[in-house]
Length: 152
Image (cartoon, rainbow, N blue to C red; front, side, top):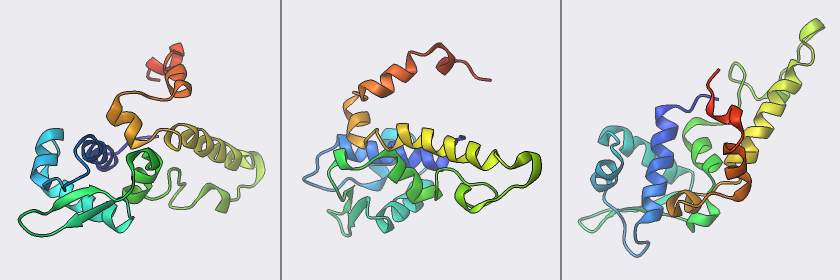
């Protein structure tokens, strides 16, 4: 999986919102500066996150953004899906919608397995986990596998 800049910015923005006070909204430029995200990108991303119900906003001089739900209920998968769509797509389709014939027939199962493994990580890690700097033990265990640190 390739994590786009948009997905990375969306996750970082939600983590930044989770790390702040939930009593008052955070200004867009404050979040952008804290995470080094270009302001124009962040404004569009926050609009998509608001449409997905992940963040809420308030207009006016005291306005800004904050999480619409508790951070421990928002997964990284939800954030990424809000700005990018399904986690795994093949030519714009979901893996279960694709059929292959002949020698490539089992390829659909490969795409479905890939999606399943991505979900094991991204559906299990919450914005609160990242904001607190404490990942679930299962995820940390994956990072201890030697192959995890080698790009191929």
